Image 1 (spheres, rainbow, N blue to C red):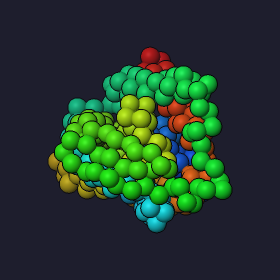
Image 2 (image 1 turned 120 degrees about the vertical axis):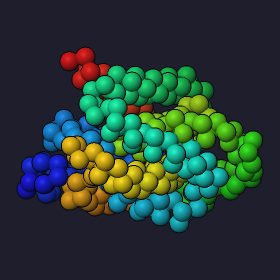
Image 3 (image 1 turned 90 degrees about the vertical axis):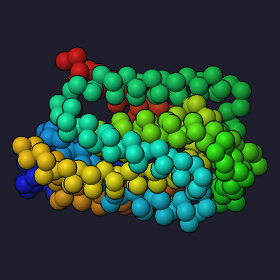
Length: 301
């Protein structure tokens, strides 16, 4: 099957299957998997136009709501964290989308920076786990027997200074402005490459702000959803001003990715509370390092 906007020729079963597998595991770590689908589209499918960013964000728009629904239904959505993430990433993603079309039509220019950032976050996350593994290895998991009773979060404080909430008998606090500034910077990066930003925000929440990974997934996915909606709309609005470039998303390809991602994200969000936090962190860290290495290798090739 040939997709007219992107020019990609691939079986219609490949995009949803790939998206299902990626989103199932990625959603457990609070990410949509878009940052993994982007190199798949560019390197495997040969889709390198600026519109690949818009198509990737279209995938987020279709896929993420099912995962968000599960987190809300199970009362694992930290709403103050979600609001702070959305407030920062929304303006950032618009700047990033503009930068993608005007200054970075060649994706190679940004691969060095993106690879270095992903490598740094992934290595820091893995190093942090190695340091703590000897101290309390059992404390990072969630037992299946009490997962349903212990998975809910309760907001304690939401102000301009801090966000505080309770989870599994412990109180977790983070600076509101720190979350906002981080989200704004990540929004620019996510808007540029159509990855939503959750792949960077989620590990930062875990490695820097020391927030439990089971509590941040809903917030980062919701933030990614909102910024992706804004990103797709912005790409469509600026497309008439850049008639010489392919800017609008490939709707057919994006929807196929999104359908597979919708199923995978729902299943991943449903299963997350039964998976130990350590396993999710290791998965997230290794994926970040692997993707970072891939970007760096492609830059210097």
